[in-house]
Structures are given as C-alpha cells and as structure tokens.
Image (cartoon, rainbow, N blue to C red):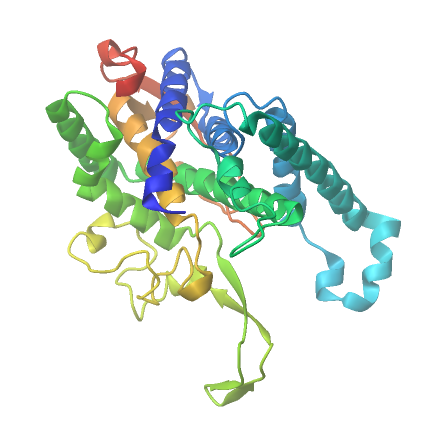
Length: 369
C-alpha cells in the first residue's frame, strides 16, 4: 500500500484516536484492559479503511476475522501428522469451523462489493475512496490488469486479517515493554510531549520528528515480530550449509530467532531502543538481521499502514496519559509470557491504570486528536 493511499486514511485514524482517547480519559484512575481496547480500535480503523464509514456489515465481518485469526493460529494435528487428518472431524472439527467462517466472510464481502457497485454511479468524486473502491477500478476490465470478484474478496480478507491483528499485537507489546522499562518510558514521553507541545497539537505529521519513538517501535518489532515465522517457497534448487534444498521446497524463516541472535545484536534479550538511533537498519528487508516485515518481493505490502497504526496510538498514549500497573504491582513483575500461535501476542492481556497528563488537551477538536 502506497504512502499516498495510507495518507488518504488519515482522517479516519484521527477520528478513531479521538474516540479512543475519550474512552481512556473517561476511565482515568481505573484499571482498564488496554489489550482489548487496542484490538477493538485497530479492527475499526482497518474495517473503515476497507469498507467505508457506513458499512452495515462491519461488526459482523470483524467478529468473523477475529474468530478466523484465533482458529488459524491454533494447533492442527494434521499439520504435524498428515496421516491422522481423518481424526479432525471426529475430535476437533477444525476444518469444518474454518470452512464455515470462510463461507460467512465470503458472503459478507460479496454483499459489500455489490453495495459499492450500486453506489458507485451516484457517488461524489470528493468522497474518500476506501479499499474496495480502489480494487473495483480493476474489476473485470477488458485490458491490462484485471481483478475478478473472487480476487477482490481474497485481497480484502488478506489485508484485513494481516493488518489488524499484527498491528494491535505490536502496539500491545510496545506498551508492555515501556511499562516494564520506566527509563525508556520516560524518555519516550519526554520526546512526544516536547514535539507535540512545540507543534501545538497531537498531529500525525509530527511523528516523523520523533526519532526515539520510532526507535521504540523498531526495538519492539525486533523482540516481538508479530509474524515470527515467515513461510516461503524455494524458487530454485540451492544449497545451504551443505544441505541441498530442492526447488518448490516450503521453508520457514524464523524472524523471531534472527531478531535475538547475539551474533548481530548486543544484549539481544534486553529492550534498548537506543541501538537504532544511529543505525542504518530499516524495515525494507535489506538488512537480513532485521526482517519484521519479511524481505524481497513477498515482504508485507501493508508495512506503511501497519507502522502508522502502531506509531500514532502509541504517541497518543504517551502524550495524554501517564500509566501505572494495578494493585501495587512493580514494573519488573509484569508478565511478558508469549502466547502460542501464528502471531505471537502476550499470553495475558495488559491491564493498566491511566492517569491524565493534562485534562485540558483531552477534549480538543478531533483534528488535534
């Protein structure tokens, strides 16, 4: 997704951040489940970007996407022992559940596409295009690049599934690491507040001035890549460390282990954003010791959207609120256990108590969050 397209969704990100900020402010001094709220907000942003503001199927589709992510990340006996696949319908019923979710999501997206096609002729050119609008420009055209209805449905579901859970997990880990590392939290908050106060508002454009905040996000993705295992298919026969790898072999790249390899990283298990401040390492996949979005032609196409969906709410959290753990818990006691799955989030939700930094900034106009 291009930078221009990501920028076109800025207003809806700002609106959702305004709503999220108000909700947190209404719970100042009380314990909140920040993990749950992060996921809900991220799903809403992606759904609105994909389907538009007034999509009556949005909540239903979000529920299906959440269920699909959970079941898709669960253990499947047949993946390990294919000969035992016949046991699935008798014991687990996993394949039947996946098929039902696929049918439900297919029906919903097809209805959304039909609605967009019906509204297309009477729509004003000034209306912001959503993802479905963009894809429909290539729908069944007679020349050049063309997309079928099934192509569009697959793209929408892939972007939605990949872009929501991964961004939410990264943001959740970032907040957990900051809570566990008060020195880093203070340094990041000082930068965010200095930049936003200088600019007069909480503005998405100002995030580019926040070098330390960006280093925090980079360090978070080094330790906690949302997709720790990157599946690929070997394009041609090759040899690695004396082992012959035939063409068409399916391989798994362990991005989680690479990010913690002491050969490339000093003190690899510690959260040290400063390691990225004077580093040329970026997200583009040219530095193979750091591949949170993959590398090559198959690297994540939604990288820019994913990053802003982490950086913007993180900056908002740090600017408007101070945070503490409930029940007198100390920062070093925060549980950082990882959950099992294709995407690796925290095993236990992050519960925190927000404390307003400056209540006068909480309810400013939506353009300033």
